[in-house]
Amino acid sequence: MDKSTSTARELVPFALVAYGIPFLMGIPLAIAQQAGYSTDLFANAQMYYPAAGAIAALLLTRQADAMPRRFFVFHLICTGLMALCCLGTVLLPGGGWLVACNLIVILGSLAGWGILLAQKKELRQAAGLGWQKGKLVCGCVVLYILLRTAVVFASAAIAGQLGNYLPYWSTPSPYMVLLFLLPNFFLSFMPFWGEEYGWRYFLQPRLQSRFGMRGGVLVLGVLWGLWHLPLNFFFHAQSTPLQNVAGQLITCVTLGIFFAWAYLKTGNIWAPVLLHFFNNNLSVVYTGAAEISNQTVGWMNILAYLVLMGVAFLPFLASPVFGKKKSSESSL
Image (tube, rainbow, N blue to C red):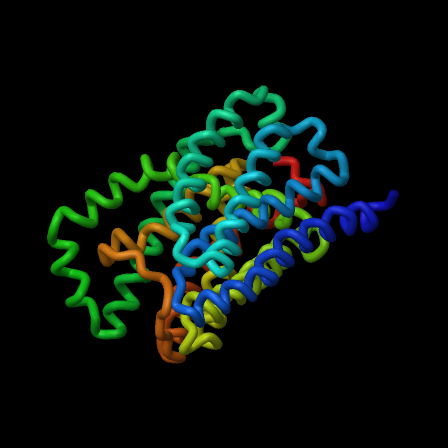
């Protein structure tokens, strides 16, 4: 079997799960949004689908035979339960589905650690789930927090809203929230692992094999952004969906560069998992709230965001790590 056939056999099941399920779930998401039901759990559930797609591809191509299969199967079970909670929101509204979803995330993360660590180290390593270069991983996380914070404050200054941030940042609250984020990671790592194992571990090296080390990362950023379309239209910003799609693409391309840089620099998939966790939770640090639905976004905001995110993260694409050749198979 040639390389192209092998890659197709991997990418088809990945796409059917990672993209097919969230786009199909866009139907009940739209129904729930129109009916005024809680839609937060749809965003949480969607984070599980990329790793589920990667696992399906690895299982179908027999690559998972020498990997932590129990942990993989457990993730698939959690993914199915999350999807059922989303359907339950529409079919049986008022059934406490968001609470059930949160319990799946927390209890699933705790059980997931136990199942993963109980697997042999060799199996974890074979699946790219080992831990190495810990100090460098921590450095990448600190660097990201500094850059992202600079973007947020610069954006607030441009919009004339810096005064809304400074009083809050003169209190201990943001620093306490930031301090407690890391322990919370261990209670909620599964959805973040669910995205990054699919995007960075599975899809990134295959796209880099096809489009080059830098081109593959840019293509992945676009694909990652388009993957959010159901959420863009029916969750994040129903009144300004096109602006939200543009902002999503900017986010995914620029952050995708930094996440890929950190992954290649460390060879540690937990680096982008941690980065993704902090990215999604830093809004609580900045404002004391974590509202990400029903936003209104203007085109001038998008333009400023493009410039700021570009300045902060595009330079990492010039890093020498993107000049190293990688095989089509993920070997990290």
